[in-house]
Image 1 (cartoon, rainbow over the protein chains, first blue to last red):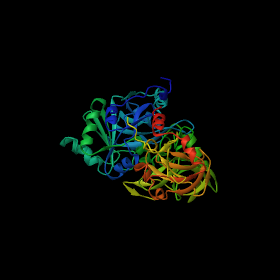
Image 2: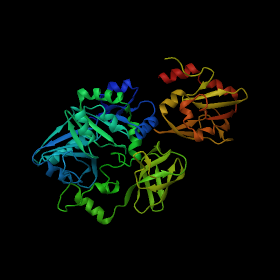
Image 3: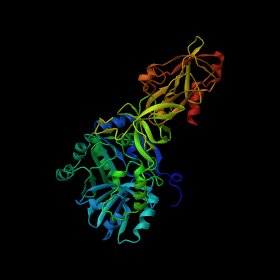
Image 4: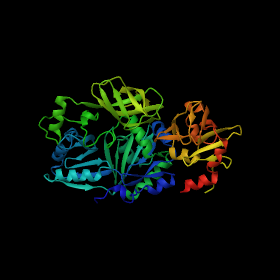
Length: 368
Length: 129
C-alpha cells in the first residue's frame, strides 16, 4: 500500500473497455488507466461547450460518513461549514486543511441526512486524505465507508441534462430533472447530482460498477460523446476551477488559492482545523494571490512559467490554450499588489498578459 | 502496419520530414506520427527567413494544447521561406502534415547531406522502437 501508485500496474475503471472501443488514448493518471483524449482534445472540449459530453471519473474517491457525530466531525475537518446544508441532497465545495492552513485536498460534500454525509475527494490524494480523515475521525462517533463499489460518470454541456434525462424512466426523470444546481438525489442504486467541473450545466452520476457500462452506452445512444481528461483540464481552467496539486497543495492556504469564498468564518467559535493559521494570515494580509491571465500576444501559457510584475515575480500554476477563446489563458500566483497587467517569460521572451478574475468562460459564453 | 510515410521524402529521428525540391532547397514539416503524438496544434513559432541554421539546431516551437515541442533544423543551411498560413491555421499541421502543413524551406549548405537522413522505411523502423 505504501508504494507509489505510479509504480504499480494502473487500475482500470468499469468503463475501461468502453474507452478502448471509443479509441481512447490511455494514460496513467493517479494510478488509473484513463483516456487523455479520443482523438482531438479541442473537438471534445467544444462538444461539451456546445452540446453534451461525458467523462469517466470513476477514479475519484467516494466516502460515506454515518453516525451521530458526523456533522460535528465535518465542521471540525472542513474549512467550509456543513451547517449551511439544510436541505437533503445539497452539496458544498470545501477545502480540507492542515494545522498550518495548507490545503490537503478540495472536495464536495453532500448532506443526505443528519447522520449521513457523502464526500468526493481527488484520486491522486486518496491515500493521504484517508490517513488524515481517519486520524481526525478517531475522536468522533462515526463510520467511514469507501464506496469503491460505485463508478462515476460526469455528463456536462448545455444539452447534457436533457440527454441524460432521456435515459431514465418517467418517474426517475421527474426526480432528476427537478434537481436545483448543487443538489443530488438517490435514484435506485445510483446518485445523480447537478454538479460538475466544466462551467456547464449537467450531472455527476454515481452508479454501481456493474451497471456503469450500461449507462455509458445509453448516454452514447442519446448523443452524449466521450470526453477525455485533456479536455476536462481545459474546461475546468476556462471555468476558473482549481486543480489540486497544481493550483494549490499543502503548502498553500486557500486565501492564496482564490478559495477565500469557501472559508466559513462564521460562527466564530467553530473550531475547524487550520482556522488559527488562516486568521493570522487574514490579519497580516496574504503576500500572494491566485489570478487569471489572458495572453495578449501569440503563444501558449504553461504551468511554471515565470510571471513578472512591478511588485515582484510570480508563477503560472496552470496554463493552456483556451479552445473556447482561441487564446492562451492561465492561473498564476503573483504578488497581491499586482493588477491589470503583467508579463510572462516564454522561452526567454517577455509577453504581455492581462490580469483578470476567473472564470474565463461560463455556460458557453466568454467573460473576458 | 503499413508505412504511411511517403517514400520520396527523407526523415529525421526527431520526426521531421524533408522534401528535396530539386533546386538546392528542401521543404520541411513534421510527420503524421509526430502530429498524432502532439495532438491539436494551436501555435507555431516559425524561424525567420534568412536565418542560418546548423544541423540539429533548435529553430522553432510547435505548441499543441498538450505541450510545447521544439523543432530542429534537419541539416545545415539558410531558411528561405516559412509557411505563413500556419499563423492563422496552425491546425494544418494536424490535417495535412505532409502537405499544406509544411513548416519551412531551407537552402542546404550541401545538398548531398540529404543522404545522411533516414529513408521512409528506416524512419518507420525508428517509430516502432
